Length: 71
Image (cartoon, rainbow, N blue to C red; front, side, top):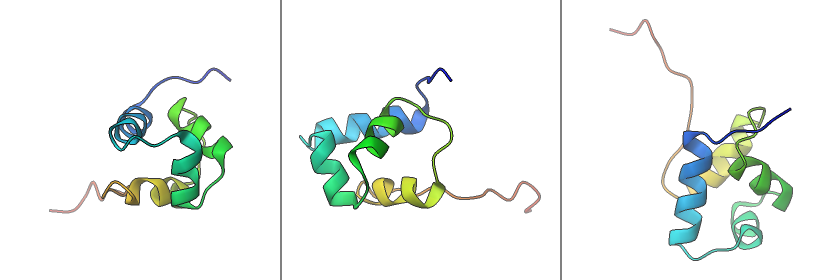
């Protein structure tokens, strides 16, 4: 399966670099594995939302469902 960049992968990589963190340091701070960070930054599309949110929370963001029918 070919991995491609996406908004989340670009965001995480950019924020990590701005924070001057290595992938290993980010993984430790977020409580996730180094491989997860690598997969995330490479644009892997089948990542667990709860684990993605562990990383995003470090940068003040989270992802979740969108209610398309909400008025």
